Image 1: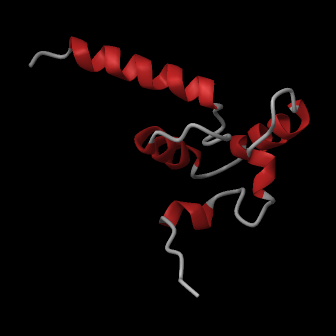
Image 2: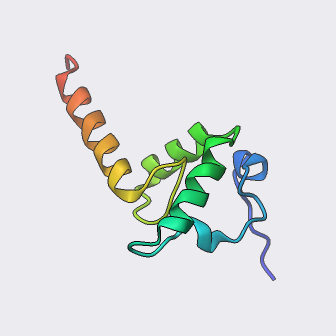
Length: 87
């Protein structure tokens, strides 16, 4: 059996040990989305989680309290801001 290595922040996450299905709600599954967001809201490593999802291009699930669509908007804003920086 292979040992899986996780980033330090995953061990500190409020969702550690929870059913991961909660964080991958289906379309219209507002109950799981609400529970995922509530869990993320109280998480000490929410920012690290969100940043990891943004950097890796995670397209599914709730990460750092955000949905795929919200992360897409954040990436777009960051690209626009980076384009405005002097070269």
